[in-house]
Amino acid sequence: MQYCPKCKVSIRGEKSCCPLCQGKIKEIDDNINDPFPTLKKKKISNITFVKVVTFIFIALEIIFEALNIQTKNQYPFIGITMLGIFVAWITALTTMYLRNNLIKVITWEVFVAIVVDIYIDLKTGFHGWSVEWMVPATLTGLAIATFIIAKIVKLRLDEYILYLVLDLIMALLQIIFIRNGMNQFTWPAVISIMVYLIMITGLVIFRFRDLKNASQKVFNM
Image (tube, rainbow, N blue to C red):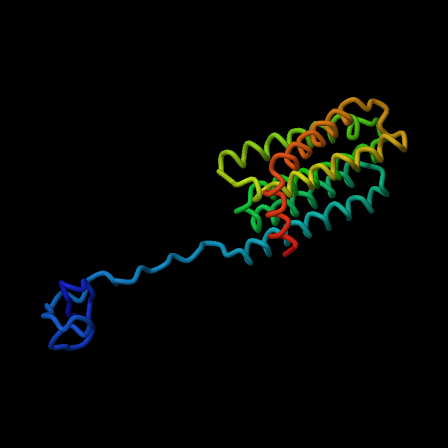
């Protein structure tokens, strides 16, 4: 193999001069490293990961459903376990596809956690702990986590402000539980709604341009 010291490229075949610069070339050992790097193949592709996770999910669901049928629905924890397996499957796939957007992952997982906890509360006789404490605390924690992640990752406000608006909508949905009497201790829910309303009001007043830019990106306005 030949090599051009000026262009610093390897040349295959027999040339009298460098085809790039027309300069002198040298004969070198053929065992020189390939000038183009070789990309390492992933041990497990994304498609393979989805297939494996989905197979495990379906297998476990079949096993627990068989147990549920054989025990004639005598054990409520089986249904809750099946729901937990489903949530784990959704979380695994979501984390894989949205791993480059941590705020989106956390927002999605919080939404799933809220739905699951309310379902479990209903299935276990409904003691109100989900809507009275878990939902408000989770939403408040989500707001704090969003700001912390945005600060660490150094995101612009217009890159995550719409997630805060979505969080506000989820917070306002707590009014449904208050109106229908499911939430008997309303202070945590009211405080979380109040925090989101004040926060979004401040953003609209002081950072309206960022909100407008974010809306234009999403809705092509």
